[in-house]
Length: 443
Image (cartoon, rainbow, N blue to C red; front, side):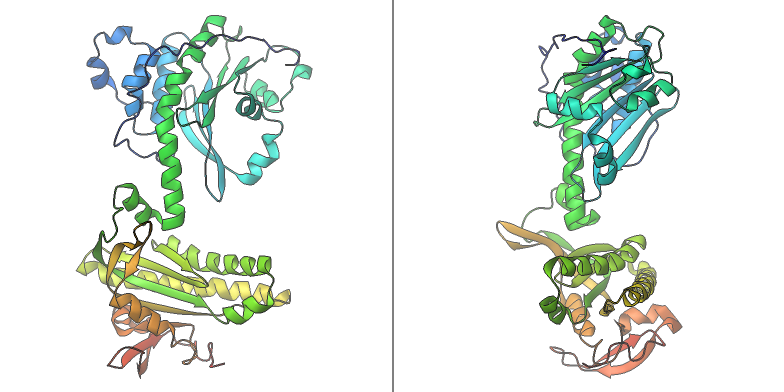
């Protein structure tokens, strides 16, 4: 600990029970900013003597029921300020399992409230080595820095930023959660004398209760995030809500999207593994972005294919879903053309695909073996979509749709006539975008 640091090692009282800190049905953590504080008067009025409720009591009886982490943090900070602790800013910092987000921070500021910030891997990695959070994560010990001395004594770059905000004292303390995870909390003040020893002790004393309140939130956030990434937001939410038994599901109406990359088998034989993965990632990003931007849900990636749906709320919603799915497909093709121009300019082969759109009822739910399930859609409508996709190359088109899908899209699509499809007794009429002739010629 460098010059200007105040050494201490207070005992943290953990004598109280945390057994009721985990609440069945706890609301999932919202990933959008929210104002601090929430109306807890009804809950507080039910306590024996609300005027004598300690911050630990508040956390375990009231704060744990807050709808969001922002509400929890805001309510706690408001209570501590009312009790004379001169807080200026307080943060809760945690790590997450997400392909794009490495960490998350909830920060409360006096007079402003609470907000959430997500940090990407680049941001975390660039500042991690010199962060006091790293020290606390690795040691599990609290760290305090007084900011009233010479800036030359600062041993962490962030201290200069905190000085510029007018902070005089800064505490970083671990949140040891029952699950075994370690998060961190930060506490800052502008009081001319910083925090008193009694105030530091009071903050440290409430940390186990705060950790217990944030633990279930962190676990649910991690689980919800992973399910959303691997299953999709809707399917992930259904699984998290308890739709987990094999065969459990429901029949829904949806516009169905199925696309696959052309000549992938031949390409995979000549491209090295890392380059092949980069190609697939580029292709899927081009397809997935427009689907998600238009409210569709990606269900799975199957080799070089992507299956997605645009759910239909009721019979009156079918036209909207079809037009939305078509707009998404047109945007994906525009992005593919732009990417191909860049690929050709740097000497790479362009990417070509076949994309089919259809609409109809599908079984949406859990399918698979007893110990390995998949949450997906099946049914004749999905099979027909796959058969239509198989016509893209012989008909020289990148995008084909069924007649049922095309009916609400008007002049945006043109009929290519009736064609036989494998497994169907009756020829099916298919539609395409005008001006796309010859884009998928028979090889």
